[in-house]
Length: 515
Image: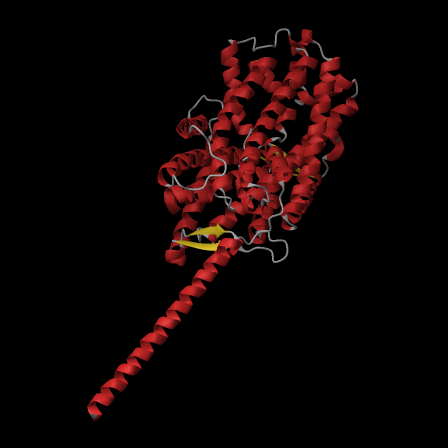
């Protein structure tokens, strides 16, 4: 069942806005805390190559997103793609899994931000409350998490343009801090520091590179936020696809250069010492590059900005994915309500915002389990979008595609294989990303909740369940209205002519009787 309407959203996002939304989503806190592990696993050069390989894997998935987003620029992204290709059941599974990914990351960032403050101010933790899964929860930690969660929700309710402005400011800070480290490493680092850590020393170079490549795709999750906000983008459709791909390329370059900069500044012995100490190898590299401990804190602030940009992007994506499901009556219609002034999915934002407020009470370790389950959900959605890309090329070959991928069969198959590989990493024991039982419990709980929504909404909304709303332009809407008016006029004329003919027939019969 399909119906058409004009968009209820305001088109306010420019090219720069969507670029920083996607790039900011991919650049979180990992580049600050995980660079030492990456170098230790694959070597400085090997880890950079590993990220390039991981970027290629995501690149194929990104190409499918680029074509589909430009062809169907509608809120919900994955929801619309999978519905057109697989129908309502496939769409429900795809969208529900991506919502898990978005919501879980947003909740995790609510815990990550106050945790990072403790790196800058060790005395920040005050007022011990309780311990969850080995993580101590303090009153000060909880207050900061809740206040920022409320602030982030309000920013997103105020409108996506407001959220994009915040994203721009924070992404510029991240970029500036990253560039400072990269440039400083060129002048204060030394090629001698790379000795013994060009590639991993405890294994073959290829094995070390592949071990890094295996985990890198999970650091690129976030480019898919662009399709979620497609109705709010005021950019030529062909450019949307290009910007999406550009955001992936920039993220790959950023990660690779940060890894090389750290390896160029810190020898292997100092990286190992940093790993056993604070664990913030990138911050320690910044301190050494500038010969100042203050600069380490500056870099940590840049990492904090990365947390907020990821949080901001996934709050946008999660609320709009829920809105699109509610529009199709797959979850309660309550979540399809837009703010009368700001045109944001207010009830969906209230729910996601409430979850980010409550999340810190569960402690950081439990949130790690949730976010791993959420990343698994994102990868499942990627795989389904890649399949949708191939299906729609067969099913709707004449669909207008402003951004069209050339060798679509090769790209589509590679995207399916790459995303399928990421899904397999979570399933196969020993892959380095296998879900633990607690994470399976989280994923299973989400599946059960989805099944409840599916059954209840199908019973409640009946034939409306799974209906796809097609967004049309104002010009097309005017044409349809004109067509409807013409049809109504023609119908009225036909009815009037029929009545006149019937009256004439009756009069003729009466006249015949009198004769």
